[in-house]
Every structure is written in C-alpha cells, then in structure tokens.
Length: 391
Ligand SMILES: Nc1ncnc2c1ncn2[C@@H]1O[C@H](COP(=O)(O)OP(=O)(O)OP(=O)(O)O)[C@@H](O)[C@H]1O
Ligand SMILES: [Mg+2]
Image (cartoon, rainbow, N blue to C red; front, side, top):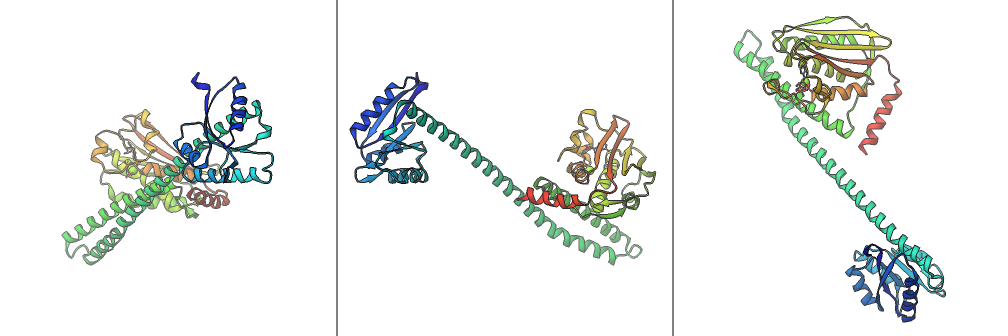
C-alpha cells in the first residue's frame, strides 16, 4: 500500500520523544508512517538535504543548537520539503511565529501530540507544500512567458526602428529627386524618381503595418481622435488610389453628409486597405464600387469588387494576422496579410463593426460601420486600457 506510506524525517535528540512519536503514529490506521531518525544538527542537515522523505519534523531544542537555525540553514540550501517544528511546553514565547517566519510550515507542542491532530498536521503540511510548489511553478512559467514576449516585442520594435531611420532618409532623397527633375526637363529621370518614391512609400507602408501589429499585440495601438467630415475623407482616399490602377473605375455611391468623431488617419487606413485589396485581388475586372450611407447615428462604408471573392470557409480567417489565401493571387500579389487584421482592430477600437460578404466567383464586399459620435470619455478609457495592458 505505497499510496499511504509517509516517510518522516525526525530530528530529535531525545530518544523518549522518538519512541513516543513512533507509538502515536502506529495508532493511525489510515497511513503507514516510516520514521527516519537523526539526533544532531549536523546529521539532521545532511539527511534533510538527501530528501528521501516526505516531511521533516524538527525539535526546537537540539542539544546546544536551536531547531530554527537548522530550519533556516536547510531552507537556505534549497530544502523544499515541508517542516513541522516540535516545541516543548516550556519553550514558550514566540517560537511559533519565529518558526513560520524562518520557513516552517507548522508547529506542534509535544504535550499536545495525539494521533488525530498529528495526522492532520502532517497531511496538511504535505498538501499545502505541494500546492505551494505547484503555484510557484505556474507563476514562474507565466513570468518566463511574459519575459519572452517582452523581449520579442522589444526586438521587433528595435528592428522596425532601425528600418525606419534609413527609410525616412530615402524618402527625403526620393522627393528631392522628384522636385529637381520636373517632368519635361528629363522625362526618364523624372519617371525613375517617381517610381523610387512610390516604392519607398510601399516599403514604409509595410514597416508601418508591421509596427501596428506589434502595437496591437502589446495593446498599445494609439488613437488621435477629432471631428472630421467622413465624405471628404472617403473622396480623398479614392483620389489617392485612382492613379494606382489603370484598369479599374472606382465609383462612389451615396453620401453620408456626416461629421464623425474618430481617428481620421486610422479610419482612412481601413478604407485604403479595402480599396487596395479590391484593386489587387480583382485584377481582371473594371469596376469597384464604394458605397456610403448614414442611418440611425451610424455611417456605413462598403467596397465591392467583382473579382474571384473569398471562399466561405476563409471569411473569418482573412481578418487574422499574416493570413493570405493560398492560391496564385497571393503569390503574385504583394502583401503581408496584415491589412485586414489591423482594419478589424481599428474598427473594433472605434466601436464599429467590420464584415465581409462574398459570393465565390462574383466578388467580395468588405464593409464597416462607425458610430458618428461616441462617448468621448471612452477615449480616456482606451488610453487607460492601453496603459493597463502595457504594464
Ligand atoms: N477583395 C478581395 N478579394 C479576394 N480576396 C481578398 C480580398 N481582400 C482580401 N483578400 C484576401 O485576404 C487576405 C488578407 O488581406 P489583407 O488586406 O489582410 O492582407 P494583404 O492585402 O495580403 O496584405 P497587406 O498587409 O499589404 O494588406 C489577402 O491576402 C487575400 O488573400
Ligand atoms: Mg491588404
């Protein structure tokens, strides 16, 4: 009956007490106790560190030594088993508190020792210790995981920062080039300068997206909110993207007539991604529809294309980070698969909804709604949230 065997290491200089303990333990039927006995501080310490027992019972008076000193020495050397201090009736004072502070799990007065109490004290001490070790293990695992995550995001921030510095200079040079070579003076160089500028913009966009995703993971995506004219923003983005496609006609349908409260740049980022996706993933088509409307304090925008669409089973996946559909499109078209993930986070943080409707082969419609006027206190809440998440 191994299950009920408890091995006790008793460190006790008085043989009579050893015999008394043996007798008491023998009466407990539920458990079989095996008592290893040591008489001195030195032998006791060696035996403790061998750890071939489940629990240690330790006399407060060990000849010229003090049990609490032994207790401290053992704990200092990494002893993890539960310890119960045995005190005599005359020891008195604050020994119990001292014992607990030194790392004992319990104490028992020799005069009070009787079977049932003894059994309970031993069993509890063992179980408590097990739970404590389990808890510590869990905590240290959590701590290690957090440390790792912290180091990972610090590394990514560093990489992104290192990438951004030369990019910013490149962008400056490209613009300088464009200014110098006005079309008409040297057509070829002007074209090259324009291409260089647009490639630098693309790279900057990728790096920024990457940075946004690391901020989302860290709960640190920041928002700068203001009132702005929603229709003007939509038109601006359409005009910005028109020159990037020769084939598509981008048509605007509906008008909201609304001034809304939110982060203009971030919301623009969502519309840009919807539109650039339509351009990228429906390359064989001629038309892209941008519809906007206003109803019961909510503006709705949708971008509809007439390309291959998104299969049913992929519709939620496209909003996951780094997710791209596995077919030819993905390999010939550039992108990290971050745009929709960032868009979803932006719309969520701006208290709107985002979704995709699609019929395979007939196209995709990406939409979002945004409340026109939110409780501005929530701006503060968002900041509080991100501060809390960051700490
Ligand atoms: N209009 C669309 N039609 C078909 N598939 C689409 C459409 N929009 C997105 N997808 C699919 O969803 C995936 C994720 O889109 P997402 O915008 O997140 O990333 P991406 O465009 O690949 O890269 P980027 O990070 O540059 O935006 C795309 O790779 C594509 O497979
Ligand atoms: Mg995209």
